[in-house]
Image 1 (cartoon, rainbow, N blue to C red):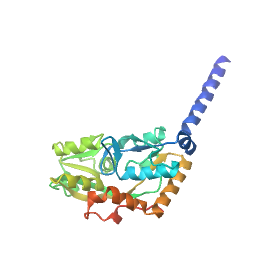
Image 2: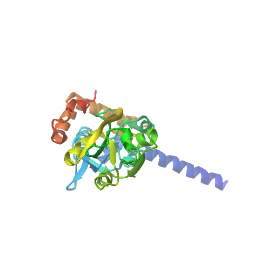
Image 3: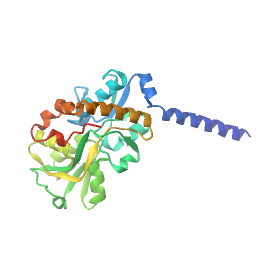
Image 4: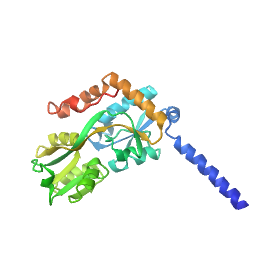
Length: 270
C-alpha cells in the first residue's frame, strides 16, 4: 500500500512539474517576468552577431521591435546565444521564448517547433577560393565544409552522401577552416555567403542557388499556440508598416549594396 501511495505522489509531482514546464514561456509568464528571452546567433553577421558585447544584426533589429510590441520597451529582451544544431532544443526546453536565429523553415523542423510568419527568403549556396567550385560535379573527391544542423548539412547528407563533409559547430570555425585550406568549399545560406565573400575577396560564391527556395522565420515551442498567435499578430503589424524593409536598410543595405535586390530577399508578413 505504501508503495502505491509513493507512486501516486511521484506521479502527481511529475504532472505538476510538467505543467509548470509547459507554461514557462507562455505569454503570461513573459509579461510577469517583464522580459522576453530570445535565442539568436552570435557569430553570423550580418544577421546575428556580437560586437563589443552588444548583439547586432538583422534578426536582432526585428527581435527588439517584437519585444517593444510585447512589453512596451525594446530593451526588455534577453538574448541567449544558440548554435545551428541546438536551435530546436532551446524553445522546447523553455530556455528561450522565441528563436530569432536566421532559422530556415523546413518540414523536418516543423515537426519539432512551431514557425511564425516568415520575414526573409533564402536558398543554399557554395563559396570557394576564386569561385572554382561551380557545380556539384566540381565537389567530386573534394572536402565540403558545413555547419552541423544547418540546411546545408541536411541537404548534402541526404542528397549527396558521396561528398566528403567536414562539419563544425560554429560559423567562425567553419569559415576559418575554409580560409586555412582545410576544405575546398563551404556550403551555407547564400545570403550569408554573399556577405562573407564581399569581406573576403579571394573567395567567390560559385554556386549561388542550390536546392529549394526556402524562407526564414522565428519559431516557438511546439504547441505554444498563444505565443505563436501573438507573434504572428505582431509580425503582420510590422509588415503593414514595411518594417522589414526598414530593418534591411538599417542592417543589410550597406553590406549588400547594389549587388542584391532587397525585394528578392525580404518578406513583409501579411
